[in-house]
Image (cartoon, rainbow, N blue to C red):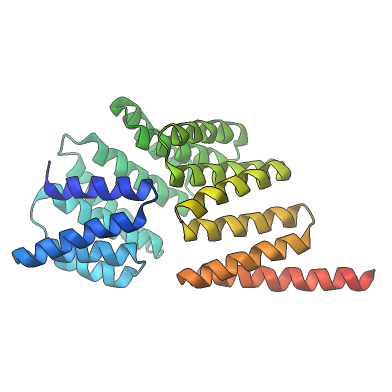
Length: 296
């Protein structure tokens, strides 16, 4: 096992446990080590990783471009993160190209977890493209590998992703079943971040089924886990989803209150898209509420 893989596995574990600062500290220590050793390729890799964790995609990509790693096993991570950045910035064709290059490296190793990880990336890409059947196939392959390896962290992720894929295809019954299984695994391994994600997705499925009161309770439970970590981005998502749920229930005052919380949280973490979405709904619902009051 390369040192980079060892460090990346530990960083992933810390992030899964909700210890985001711990994940950043590992990357910082490796950055300092590479700097002291005069190892520019790995210095740029870890600097790129830190910029990615801080949500600065342009700076992250510049450093990944300068990492110029030569070991096949480590180049995989460069291609993977370049693909993830392109996916998050909407450059879907570039993302697919980088994921294909990462997969070509993964196929030449004995590390099945690499293939599982990149299959998940492809699933995320095809979901963004609206190719939900293709996404489901990728997630199912990743889950199959996770079950073979007995990796509970990846089994949880696999169940969750397969559940979301079924939801995107309108199969809410299977979506709920897989998400419930994912939550069970997350609870067993005490993955608070995972529990937040599973409950958020399950609640969204309940909303699609018209079970809004049940959805609201799950969102509230998920919010507790997000606050414990703390996962501010997750909290913003949950406030937004709770606002949507109250809207569907016809409770405009509580909907506005949740969107206001989403706005404050988004501004706190510099989430411009989240802030814009919350502002839009606050204005829309406030106007609707004023019209409703005027009529009475």
